[in-house]
Image 1 (cartoon, helix red, strand yellow):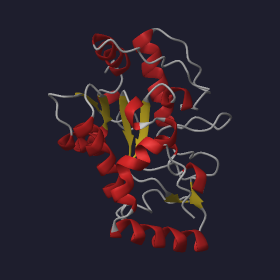
Image 2 (spheres, rainbow, N blue to C red):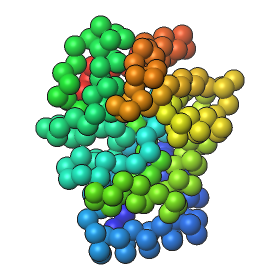
Image 3 (spheres, rainbow, N blue to C red):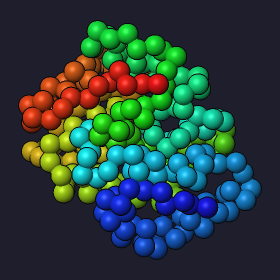
Image 4 (cartoon, helix red, strand yellow):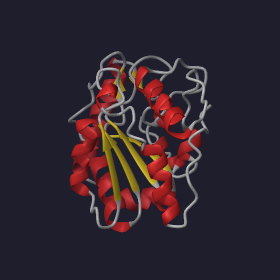
Amino acid sequence: MINPKIDASWLEVLRPQFEAPYFAQLKEFLIAERQQYVCYPKGGDIFAAFDRTPFDKVKVVILGQDPYHEPGQAHGLCFSVPAGIAVPPSLVNIIKEINSDLGTNIPLTCGNLTGWADQGVLLLNATLTVRAHQAGSHQHRGWELFTDAAIQALAQQRSGIVFMLWGSFAISKAQYIDRSRHYVLTAPHPSPLSAYRGFFGCRHFSQCNALLQQQGLAPIDWTRIQ
């Protein structure tokens, strides 16, 4: 049911979570859910963010709340959809801000962000599964404990990571981040309801790259969207 396809570096960091009582309860819940409902993403993609971006390679963290809940959309990376799937409104606004910030011309029809994940951008949802057509249906079942532990591990064991927190939910995770060790960029959520309140014009993508380059790290090629 849960396919633990996850990079070995993350498996080591998160092993106490996999062995915790709450995670056993979470697994039981997911087994029951999948017996009754269609759930997303597919089992092999649940931990895709951790599998594509090893713990020691994380340079940037972008946080989402829930996987997409319509067919074909969710593949384990927040905000991202597989190539060929219609780009959701929040991701359209993210691409618009990148193009405005960096002077690029990324098509608004491309939405697969695996190219970011492969460069060290952890695209992490707080909840890693969802029931089809029901946003938020797997919240408060244990996933938040698991993903909070991942954020805390990065905050405590790494340094110099750029956390890009959009919207009140993501910004609430800043409580786990030592700003003397890391960089925290905050803005309203890129959804159509709030993007015009300050997401547009936040210039997080150029700021992020400047912060990485100050540390002697390669900038992120934000145009790597399929």
